[in-house]
Length: 308
Image 1 (cartoon, helix red, strand yellow):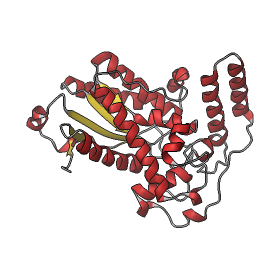
Image 2 (cartoon, rainbow, N blue to C red):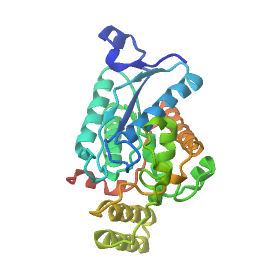
Image 3 (cartoon, helix red, strand yellow):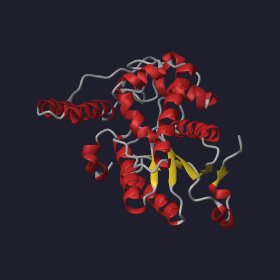
Image 4 (cartoon, one colour):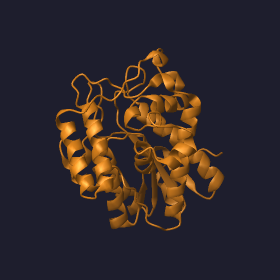
């Protein structure tokens, strides 16, 4: 497999020589975020970079005519776990950076930017999808984040995803396994096993607490929305209620799930699911069709402008 080019290494003549219709830019994007006592704060980007390597291998096998060019990884994302050590970036800033990248590449005549991402923060997802829709509307440029589509499948325990991965509820990155639990620890066993701290297998499971306060009110709103026929929005609001209940706890346990159940095999299967979905969306773009994901809480996307 030939090595992908790195954008920062290219000189102007190199950029000018790239085939505009066949060049696919790749960008790993996720925040610096506390991932329990056993995973590093760069976990999401380390996983995204491993996924990026798999994108490149898949392109070489399935689309050898394409030219992969790697942009420097972007350690930026919103709605990072609010624990000291996390560095969260407001969603409008994330949206602005990605929109500017799309504009700059589109101005050169390029058409494709494929993100790798592993962060489920609601406003992070909204910011990326908003940038993607702006890029398509203004410049007919494809900015694709497959994780936005995959994360919905994870949270909803999508039967197809569970069949593909052989995983089940509370191990597939759903709400009871939302952060640095079975799924993310499994992914790190593949992406960067040397960065997992000793003792991960001995950590007790962190389980969701009963809803209270504002989270309970959001769950009540979800019930009302469901009664009025808004089934999808109700499910999204229930996810928001569970997320708020965990992350807003002043004594929050900085992981959710059971790291002791993590396996390398589970990580490999989830990476394969990531990859298959990414290639499907990219091939949709290569065929000239619009690509839109429907991230969780997209109908409430105005939330992305709220201060963190």
